Length: 354
Image (tube, rainbow, N blue to C red; front, side, top):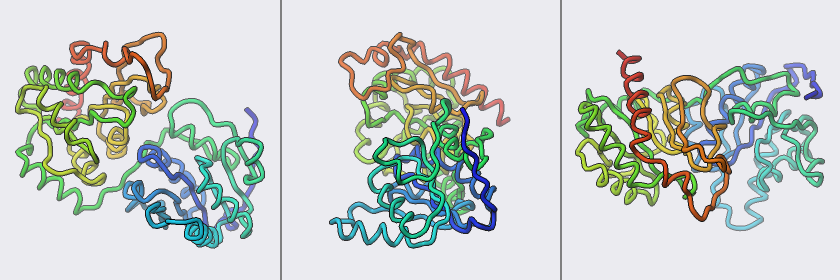
């Protein structure tokens, strides 16, 4: 795949805008590309345009100079939206990278062009959006971070295996230690668990999660399983804990913030769950992961031995659909079939930390 190469003198790039509005996991998966840009143009400021709920995962990132966090609740009418987009576009960006081509991003890209942004990169757009971008590429297949970074190929930049990154502050690391001690999880083999997903086709049944955790707890009595939950998910977490039939499963009384969860995961031996944001948080802080997949492809699995996934292996997988009449790929994947891989990865993680 031939890509037109841009030969931009480094001093001409003083300010860069990276656009990735959502979702939380996708924003994390953009951080390798952000690192590549910062390393290629070390004197340039790298700004990120994202949604407010995703911004926390970018905080304290040394490769980012400023985060433009869109709070949709504040942009109550078109006038306020345009004023905000104008404010962003007027920052004098020399280079804009668009990973999504969503309407809000297109406003910023178009206005940045109006204010003199010369280089505007994205993946191949529909014909009616082609005018927005100076250089486009066809995204490469493979791991999601590789796909995003391939948009940078006109700059001569390529993904080299960089994982997503989240930079914890010392006080956040200290808080995690205090939290685990107060929860009775200090000096335990900790597994963080995320059984949730907003799409039913990507969510293993709660009873299955509970069953495999109960079996794992019986096989590894020293292990403890912290079941994380987000907005509206506490009932699911409690259902999983109840189905496990063991006191080894712990559901926090209150929802942890994204950064608090990441700080706890950094102290865990393993993260186990669905393919959702907490999985990518774990990768970003260096914790091994295992995900149970339904309709999701393995493009979201970081390609290294300490990160893996399990699926039933039906001919229809992966379909990447959000709706299904049967969902046999999830319901027919028995906890007993998942248990050996969960125990193997847990044992390997513990041995690696010894």
